[in-house]
Amino acid sequence: MDSPEHQAITEAIDQAVQLTAGSGLIGIFEAQRRTFDYACLTRRDLARPLVAQVHWKHEEGLDKDIRTLLFDDESLIRVLVIRDAVRTRATLDDILRSYRTHPELNRMLLGLKLFFIPAEFDADEEKERDWLREHLRRSFTEDIAFAILFGGFTRQVFEVFMAHNGPFGLKYAVLDEIVKNGQTHMPTFKNRLGYTTSGPIREALTMLNATGLTQSWASSNCYFPTIRGRFLLDFTRRILIDVKNGTGWSEYTRNIFEMLACPVPDFPMEQVTVKDCAGSSFRSNLVHAAKCRDFFGRDLIGDVDPTQPKLYSEFEIEGFVARMNGAPRFSATFFDQPDYLFYPVARRDAKKSDHQ
Image 1 (tube, helix red, strand yellow):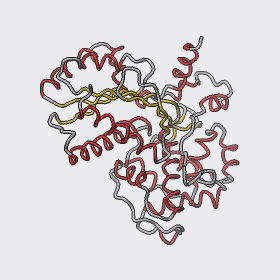
Image 2 (spheres, one colour; image 1 turned 90 degrees about the vertical axis):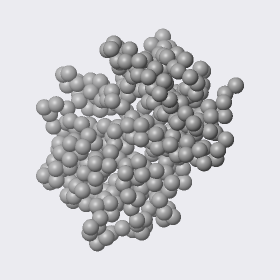
Image 3 (tube, rainbow, N blue to C red; image 1 turned 180 degrees about the vertical axis):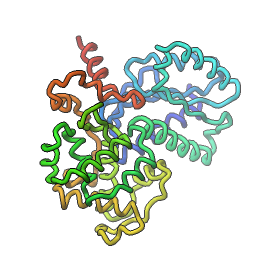
Image 4 (cartoon, rainbow, N blue to C red; image 1 turned 90 degrees about the horizontal axis):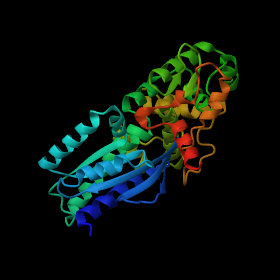
């Protein structure tokens, strides 16, 4: 029989996951729990199975919980919520040290996330349950959503992007085109944008590449999307939906601003114009997003249902590989981003082998 604390933690994990999913920026689907306290399938760019285990006992059994998480071949994100105590910390350090000394085992730790709960937590106290929900909300959003699913997106990246000027709407048009088609031939790229001046395009490309919003193939003029850049477009869509609805920032958008450590901007009017931009990089960025439609024919939320937005999609790697037309040494593994558990080719091949 699980303790009240164990049950409260499991419920709080689900609430934290569902809050982020409510933004439309990730998809959450049910998964069979098997031996775990919580399990789901997260979708953003590709499917990343998530499992969670609550360790609310003495340090005995901790090694088994970690081993069960790490050796679960079906999961990528492994969450261990631990009752914090000195002896437990010491045992945990010994266990993790044994994994870090072996290169193959050390790599398995990449998807392991540890959340600590004070040993004196009492699930019968309402204030403590409220604290728990808030603590796990912040932990999930920061350590899983931003650190993994959103590609390490940070406030600094956001501010650099917002501070970039150039022709209104161009930076969004460039990013949108790269996310959809990449850039493998500049004349074709400019034709798709409907913009003929090379200088501003190259300045935007330099900024996008420096912030990790795009990635270039070494020693070439070819640019491709990253999961971080795809997230920026989708977060902008989340912002534009709130602006269009005109009822203030949603709790989901506020959650993202908070996790970026950004002051929540004053809610803008539905139509923010060029004259409103002075002294506000955020409002200026809203104008860039709107002018992307007016000047480049790209309505960022034109096909989004504002009442139930789905702001994520599958990262279609094969199409970008095909556009390289068999270039030597270029393959789908170019898009692998191990720090964010993004192995699209490995996951696809693993699924194939499972069915053979």
